[in-house]
Length: 397
Image 1: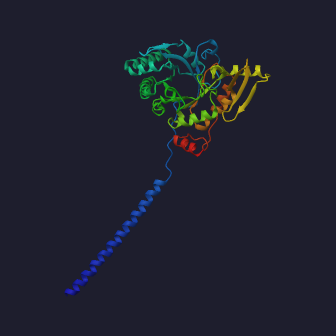
Image 2: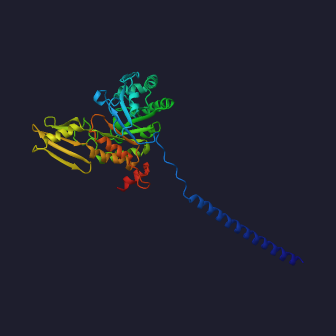
Image 3: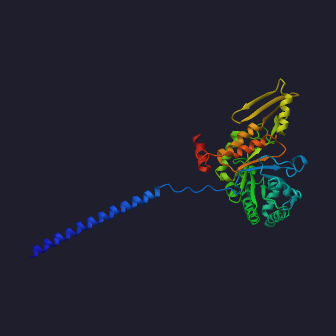
């Protein structure tokens, strides 16, 4: 009896183990099936997040108006084809206390609105780094600038503001961003568009490294990348104002920090006429507008020293000639060179173009820009590119 009981207990014991094993096996299989189903759900294509929308439902086609001579007063002249924003250069921060020099024109905004323009007056720091530093050090001075801007809005009822703060000490990078942040708060109260002009990245400390483009973009509706002055008037060497390859590289670098829909491509309506000084052993330059360049080419066409050739990399025409034994040259900006640059708006899904400055151009560039900005992007070829897309492209080249 004792043996029988032991055998019975032995059978029951191993039966329990077998039952437990089967139960655990079923639970494990169930777990695997549920896990696979969950993974399958995770790997299903998620709905794409809609691309950020710019504040305005169309591409920006802005032109800066530098002065108020009758021949360049956009409020009084016939509507410029395609242009939808004008930026008159009205305000300068005149001292470290924040006093604004006011060049605004009574009635300008009403006339511009009647022609279908938005008006975004430009305010500049005068390109004075010491003055700017003192201003940024003084909270009351910064508040005073903002207070005056709001007063000007109440007076003129413009649609936005264009900040042109340049030539800033690199050490003031964070403080200029903080200043823009406070300007943004004020413009939001008045429902104004806020834009800012910056140079291409990776330049000099005072002209390029002074901008935290990523941080600034968080407080801006639009950022104009001034893709010109590749060779500035102060350069000891001659070169193009905006070679295509240099412009595209500047766009790519900027897109690593700034969303494409906020980025507006600044293009030049001018070039520089260079001459070489043998005594000083360096080049000097003066600004040359588009009609002026064509006039020189017409006058020098039969000169035996005249040379003219297309540069495929820069996508500009290089012109050179001699005058009184002095070599002259320029890299011509014309409708062809600007069309190549404007095509980059479509390629990279940018927010539009901004042209410096009205009065330097040939009239035919306006219909061209209008058409380039109307071009629709295909779904596959022209998705807005992220910073990672740009980095990968650059690595693969």
